[in-house]
Image (cartoon, each protein chain N blue to C red):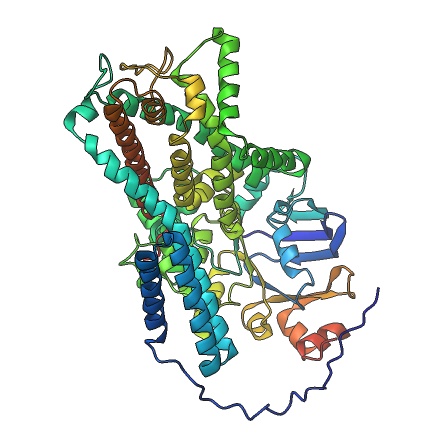
Length: 361
Length: 259
């Protein structure tokens, strides 16, 4: 073990101030960065319009030009520290825009193409007897709600109880093993979850079985790890002092968990559960093999095929039939409805966490 | 109410680490016993063994006996929950339940245990507890507002009200004033002097003036050395400890010549 410390070249005398540093420094005008940005943007636009270069290339060139100009300009006027600051600011903003781009593009596409079928028939009719235009997704909407609802019903108790075990009771090897396998489970491809559920139901009902419940089981395989993880994190955030305060009042452990720990963490748990629902509600592959597709209403999860929005959307696009345009419209419409449901779920989650969050006033 | 506690040859362990060794003392009923000593010498650890909170730490255990009026707290078949029912505790950091109102915080000891009282009895109990904790006047108009909206000193008094609402025999206080300003500290010290007419109080404090002001008996804990267990150096009447302590270590500590 060598304990040699780096000896400084110069012995700095910490008892006297360094001095000689001026308090004022050169500064770019406020409009410098925006002007450069606009100029770079215009230059890129001109390249695109006049020289007819690819738009992506133009945008990249404009961004690069902005970064180079602002950095060198700032470095000559303001010095290296501020120049670095501007450089990193530009990088971070660029990364943010890059991340936002596909998101906005997807939303815009789904909305513009999906609204074509937002009429009363779309929401009130199923696909029975529909070969051309018209038809609706009523059966798929209800199917999605039933299957996701059932999956939630299975996953939330299992997931929450697992998390409670891990945080409040789990010690030693068993807890470690469970944590490990929960982590592994988050990485299961969704089709594998679907095949697992299918195989499970085949063992009971025989080959070729299709039912909503199987879909719900497949989804809950995907959902449980998310619920466990988010609940676990939330329970860990509950300060130990609250548990001790409760124990000191002679409250038994199970009551402490039920009445002190869970209520304190409820807002976060509710958010986590909603996000877990949002994650599985759009799953297609596992429902394809377990719940299948049907044209008519089937709201009995224990018997027969059941359509969900994602599977419906997939089939409408994959095998459009003779009236392709109408099919595509339905597919986009279903996708938009699914997106709206997820959005509503997120709003609900926010409302719930506001409602349950510990207040201080 | 108020019981005598006899501690005999108590060794306190965290897993294999012996944290406090060989403590024997008698805690008199209806009095304030102060425990002083340097940080890390095991005062709080010892205090937490008195209501079996110590064992909440994984693998923590004790050897020896703590007898409260003929009942060994560490005897077989003793339910720690029942021990804590009789020995309440106030912590260093005020910890009101954030999900509950001021009223519910005071009533928590009963409500969390599903003991039902008539509304008027419960109101009465809450009012009495808050009055005992000198908090009633400040919060009586906002009983149903969250407890976490109170100031630090008020929160600590709320915790005291919560602890005495279940009418324990003994009240343990782990540095209850260490995060409070002098005015709140004064309020809590006054409160201790009032409470000792009914309760047995044990307080851990770093503030020797506080120990001198409020306690009848003072115990001095010290470390034998780095990595060695803490021990009770001496315990005696407060006036004696602060004027003519028997041990040199005690004198050094209280006169500020520590180490």
